[in-house]
Image 1: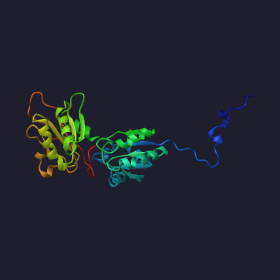
Image 2 (image 1 turned 90 degrees about the horizontal axis):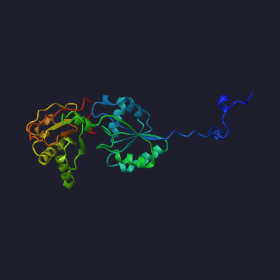
Image 3 (image 1 turned 120 degrees about the vertical axis):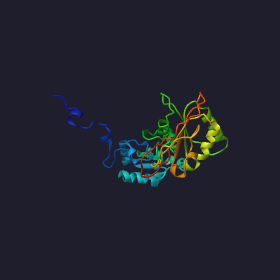
Length: 281
């Protein structure tokens, strides 16, 4: 009879990794990865099953605010991995260490306070560093405030096209140029603004865009309400102090009305019930 093969007999082929390994050697760890994880805008029930699994198994977790992310993990019953603060100021400094951890075989998860990392939130710098280093990247999709503001605005066409601007620069030429771009856009434009600056920003936008614009204003506060608009544009200037958003405001400015109509869509509510507020992303 012919001799038994290694496959049939369970013998290890000569020259294999197992044959050359010493008794004290540790099997090589699986390649690491970096995973961008979208988190809820307000309602913690919006988190996905896959996001929970990644957060539960990550070796290291980069986040904007360790306290806020800690509360999310506590709500999910997850024992916190090593948390690394990565906000807009610290991201350039910590990106290298996060990429190095992934190259050593760790799973590095990246979250922000709310929404999708990299969209008006930290994430772009560490993603670029990971790509340059050849680290595998994954994304766990989920909430994005820009899309939420757009779909609830009533200003989209059948293709659902819109322009996302995020936060405008505070002042100077950069702000003026962005305002001009919003005014010239032929698509609805989604912007973010903090509550205490919404009135001033809406005033600047109204001056730049002119009167014949339809505008939807929404927010992630759990106490948000639907407000009727007065005149050709809507802003928080028309709201009483009690009705102002407590966390974040999203606005969707429609393109110029070719008919010159001076009607305007009222502000619409967005977001959901949550234990704590969140920044828009």
